[in-house]
Length: 290
View 1 (cartoon, rainbow, N blue to C red):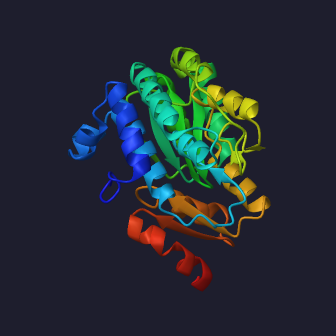
View 2: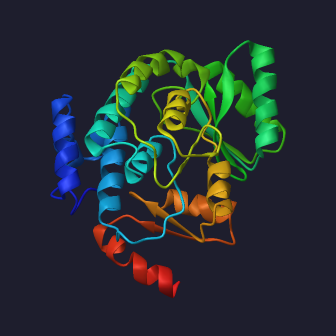
View 3: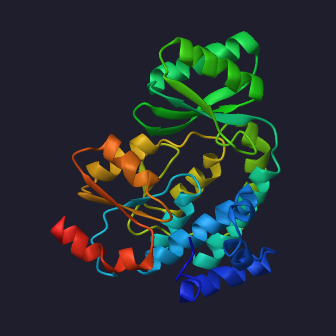
């Protein structure tokens, strides 16, 4: 997924930052899926690709705001100059390591159920079992992810299925991300976050924690601190981007999952993906012709 990106100036800067943090990211990017799958590798790899691709876009795009899903929020911060690329890389490496160290719990995707019903199923499962389980990702209408202890997630999934969810799909993750079980990881990561310089973002970043656009470094730091234990409110993020005036939503990074979600959240707004340098060079034409 990094083909054509590793020689860009921003890429060299970020690879050097990763190396100084003890991660040979270039070797991982040249490996197979198994080399990239671990959380502590996948997160910096995604950041790298997203930031490198963003650097290939035209400088004169009229961008009203940016957003990123989970770790993608750090690439969004780089795009707004709130974080420097090397600093973001060091932050995300520590974030991935802190999260990978938390082995308790799991996650499960729920298909065909709304946020309110899924939240109620989690609350009922917690009450019945005494286990932790919460809605962790509000990805799109009818597509959610729950997170928590294994017993809690299993109980909530069964309740959701009994209440109309079409499918419950266990996810291959190493922990209960975006849940209270990440509290220790968030505390460890918070120390690193506090020591990292942040600037006011321009344009604003629409943040996962609450779906609001933030325009100061202090606001952004607060949201990043809360992100590990809070749900990713992606539905709210996309709707806020549209409310701020976005008439084209561009996913920058490997794949097209987020642009697909965006079409479901805001079907009246165009969405497209940029996953290669070639696609980046054609963005202006696509935006005008689309």
